[in-house]
Image 1 (cartoon, helix red, strand yellow):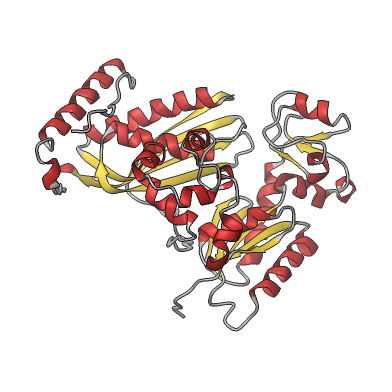
Image 2: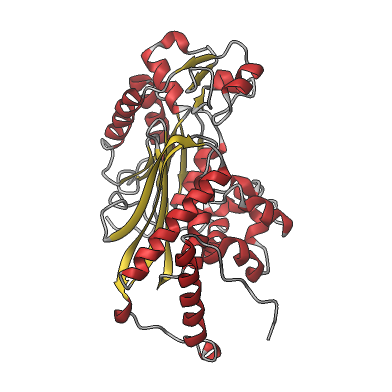
Length: 394
């Protein structure tokens, strides 16, 4: 049934790795529990809520966690168990609908529109939450909203085990007061820059009146973020979103894993450079770019961005790759890092639309600059030069 409105659930399993261990051994339920770093080194992948009461959190070093909570019990990562419980989770959701889009091993978007025809969404959400905990010992938070973005924000609104409804008419009262760092998709690196512009809340972003300044930090995603701040997100739940496409990708495994943001960013830049080089060598341009990384527990996190145009420009690809990684980054060891581009097209089959106001600088100067930058960077085997911006208003 094709309805004019959608009802989207975002279901997020709480402290997933720890919940799996408690499901296996219920005696752990009230014990402060940390997963990972069982040798006494490294960082935690997850901490249960009993541990979080002491300030312990995921991505925290084991030493710091033990200082905050001396009685913390450490368990090694048990990925086969987590994979099994994740399968139970998604198999259960499939008893309602096949309109399920996994976002990671422990969360997913579910389009409940057709299933809920005539049913109360809140009652169904309560049943899902109860069943997951009773049948599989998997506590969860659920967000209910008319689109994916609001559903995700709603599921984060009350944890653990909350159920929150976001409606378009409550965006100003519920969404706008939230701090900008809570906005899904805004990365840790971007937050300080937005605050320099006076943007401290999601409402500040929604009502900011200088899109040119915003675009310096949000790039081609500026309009998308502003629309989401107003509660708009046209992206449908798509179970086949991760389907295969013609693509060019570059990935690398790291042993020992990458431990810090700067090292990871340098590695990402090298991968992006090589992807761009392969695009140029193949006379192709790409319309989409994706970044993914995997931790030592084999948990993979990824994100994709689609341009409004095809490109092989290093500065454009790197800007989005860096922004995507910034939204994904967590203080966990990175065992694999990947950059890929898709929706490829041969250069000679693309027709460039030239704006009459840019005709004096495009295409000759732009293409000459890109060609020069690419040649210099290829010579040095890294991105030593990047295109800047002019302060000349003329």
